[in-house]
Image (cartoon, rainbow, N blue to C red):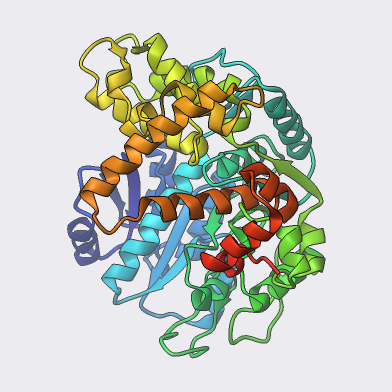
Length: 481
């Protein structure tokens, strides 16, 4: 449950907010003055404060200054019907999360409050990293004892002890944001804000404004000044997820922030100075994007001061039982009861699966299994068909370098049965063409687009592979020249 504190001396405003945010997931407290709000903070420990700037007694700006002295991580949204540019700048200098003008645009208000509450949760949920799962006193953890994860743990510790820019790489679902938050929580900036921005989830025409803010009239729809994430996160840490999706213009601004700590809002011409640590993440090979001139080389070198690479789950299968036990404990529907166990067949199926969605997919599978399981143990039949359908031979296809031809044939048979089940449901599915195209794509990905190695992997000639690439239109999809 989220705790919100509203500080406003107008009863109508307090009533309106309770109506707008009427939810069992929100616990409300109200105060009519800054002095009253200061007394409530240590008692209720709110996740977010919404406060008017003009009130009787202590002003909103002075109250904000006192809040920041009490708790620098407390998020505060300021509100006023008498907005000026100078007031907004002063509020953000003091560390406000955002600034709203009355009367409110309700959808925008809800969006800002939701984002602020998520940011508050991110800052409070401490991420632990350990070689072995020896403790149950934390909700979030990076779990593993494989050699690859030992290297990740060491780098997290080294980065936490410094203020260096970090680049986290790895496939989708490997836990890049957890690593970023672990670095933050164990760093010297852990008492300052942490804000995460998914660059791929924000339309490119809005990303620059989201990061750096904009001035009133900067573009159509910019009816008021907006403060960006970098300004909101001064002294703290900004996590830029999927940074490879940024436009060249935004890349240039990010480079300037890293070089000098300054930027201008969209439509502005006044430099703004910030002290922000940047942690970036991507699931793309940025060095290849640099070679294709899709990503700035100078920005890549600035970001790539220390690189943390997260291995895909299929490359650290020895961690799967440990992760399963962790999720069985943390996702248990009734924490008072002992966690469920997994049958031997279920564990084997999980270890044999190729996990395209990595740790995130494993978490979802365990959560589903806990819902459908009818006994104290999760059985093989409680797992999704895409896992049990591949059966014991999956590892031969995806990971086992010494797998026998019989194991590969078993896996292929199981996969063929699965494909024909899909074909019966979808008469338009052309099984052979679909499989052939996917095999060519996967072979090229596995070999880094090396056509000679991919052809050898497929058991065909390089000339035949080139014909398949042209036939299926794969060249543009994988940026093959």
